[in-house]
Amino acid sequence: MISGTGMATGSEQAPLRIASKQLKLARVAASGTSNTTATLRALVSCPSRRLSLAISVAFEPSAAGVPTTFGSSVWTLTGLRQNPTSRRLAELHAIETGAALPRMYELDSAIRMYRAACTLGIPRDAGSVVTVGDWWLIVEAEPNQLICDRDIDGLLQLVDVRAEFSATETVLAP
Image (cartoon, rainbow, N blue to C red; front, top):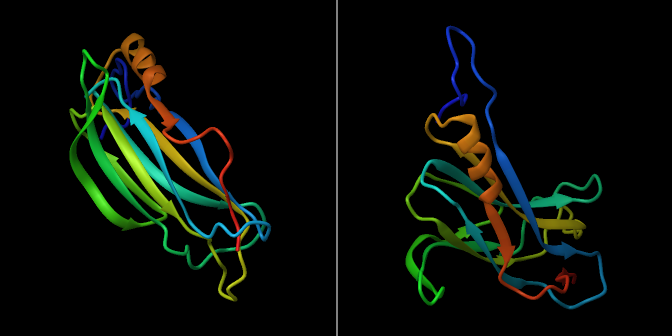
């Protein structure tokens, strides 16, 4: 990894440029539904092999509660290839399978598209009380080599994360 981009001279360093995108996967409520798990999929695209990605699935409590368990929350992270003619997606290989969430994975790869298939459970605190909050998919991109400022700004704007599931909100509750 590098700590700066652009043309730095002497002891000067240009500020590190990072793009961050977030996608809300699901909301966890104290009660109201009988959905205790949900499987959701999201696509992450990276415009260039000159960018490194950090893909995370994290839980953010909406109150002061601190979850100690996350139910049966796991993900599978898969590299994809998009056919330039048909635009269909084809799986290249599984990068991680069945890894417990919350989790973060860093990628420095020529692969330009990834699928995060997440099975989300209900987080609970030490007393087995449901921790209300939201599950998020977070993607951060940063240059993995020196790139001129003009190029890096354009590339960082093209990093994308989008749902591969319905636009309705998914709510988990006991």
